Image (cartoon, rainbow, N blue to C red):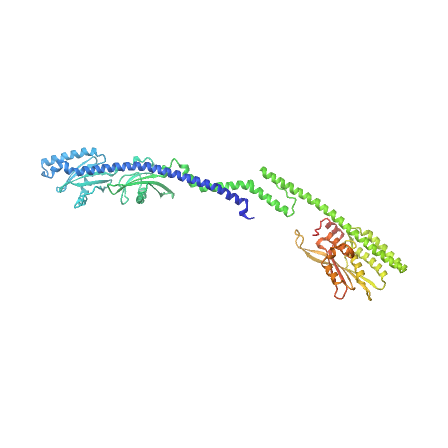
Length: 605
C-alpha cells in the first residue's frame, strides 16, 4: 500500500498542519512576552542607572568647577604662595583651608577627600571623611603621576583612576600655581549604587569597570560574571544585551546586561540582571519555549496511538478481511469494534459475507441443476439420431430381402437398445461403451459384408473408467458415412483407448499436479476429411451450428465441455497414409471419482 496515500500519512500531515501554527503562535507569543519583559526591565533599570550616572557626573563636574575656582577665589590658598613655609601665618592659613575643605566635603556628598599639595616643600594637606592614613598614602603616591600629566598640557576635566590595595578611587588634580596643586578624591564604591537595581536578584548586581575590563568598585558579582561583562563592553551602545555563560554543571545562564560609559573618566557603569530572576513572573513561558518540541512530539505520538487504536487497527482488520474474501474465503467474520460507526461497518461486512456465502451456495446448486438439465438434453438428442439411422439400415436390408441379415440386425439392434436404456445414465463404463460400439459395427458389417471391418484396441485395465454415453459412436458413424465412399478395398475402422499423464496447473489452490487422462482415438483408412471441412473442424466451427450433418459432433463436444470443461478436448486430422483421425481426451475417472467431481461446477468459458 502506498504510504503517501494512506490515512495514517494524511492524519500525520493534517495534525502537523493544525498543530504547527498553534505551536508557532505560542512560541512567538512566549518570545514576544519575554522581549516585552526584557524591554520593560531594561528600560526601568536603565533609567535608574542613567539617573545614578547623571547624578555622579554632575557632582564630579561641580567638583571640577570648585577645584578650578580655588586659585582665584580662596584668599588663604592664594596667600600661602606668599607666606613663608612653616611660619605662624602659614600654619594659620593651612588650618583655615583644612576647615574649609572639611565643610565642603559635607556639601559635595560623593567627595571623599579634598587635598592641597605643596610641590616645592612636598607638603600635603588632606581633609577626608575616611581613613586618613590610607588616603594620605594614596594621594602621595599618585601626585608625581598627576603632576606629570598636568605639566605642559591643557588641563582636562577628566578624572584619573587610582588603584589602591583594597579599594580604588577617582582623583582630580588641578594646578593652582607653580607651587600648589589642589585636588579631590572619590571612592569608587561611592559611585556604585547596587541597591537601585531591584531586579538583580541574588546572582546579579552592578559594578564599575575600567577600560581594561577590571573591576573598580566592590560588587555582588563574582569574578566570572565581571569577566563576562567585560567581554561585552563594545555593545554598550545598545539599549541592552542578552549574554550567557556556562555554569559549573554544564548548563547556560543568561543575563540582561546594561551599561553606560562615563564622560568624566575611562570607566563604565555595568549592571547584570539574571534572566531567571528577572523572568520569575514568566517561568511557565520559559519552560514552554524549551519544551515545545518535546510537547509537540508527545501530542503527535499520543494522537497517533489513539487513532491507531480507534481507527487504523479496526480498518486494517477490515482490509485484511476484504482481502481474504477476495481470495474466496467467505467464512470470514470480524470482531465487533468499540466505536458505533465501525461497529456498523463491521456488522455490514459480516452480513455481506454471510449473504455472499449463501448466494454462492444457491448459485452453485443452480449451476448443478442447469448442468444436469443441459446434459440430459444433449444425451436425449443423440438417441433419435441413431435410431433413425438404424431403421434406415433395416429398411435397406429388408428391401434387399436379406432376411437372415435382418434377423442378425434385429438381434444386434436389440442389444443396442438394451444399452440405450442404460445410456440415460450420466456416465457409463468404457467397456460398456466399447461393447455398444461393437454391436453397432456388427450391424454395419451386415449391411456391408466383406467391405467393412473394425478393430477395438483397448489398453488393459481401462474398462472401469467412465465417460459420457455414446461418446465414440457419432464419430464411427460419421466415418462410415463419409469415409466409405467409392472404395474397392475393405474399409477398416480402428478404435483405441490409452491412458496418459498430463501436467495441469489450473487449480490455484493445489498448484501443478499430474492428472491421468483417457485418450480415445477413432481412425480409418478411408478418404479422409476434405481440406475445407478439416479446417472448419480444427477451428471448432462444428460448434457454430448444432444442426445438420454435424449434430453428432456438436453434441459430443458440448457434452464434454459441460462435464469436464477445459480438461476435455477434441482434435481432427488426416493420417499421412490416408484416412481420417479423431482424438478425444478427457480425465481418466472411475465412477466413484466422477461422482465426487460431479459436485464441482464447471466453467465453460
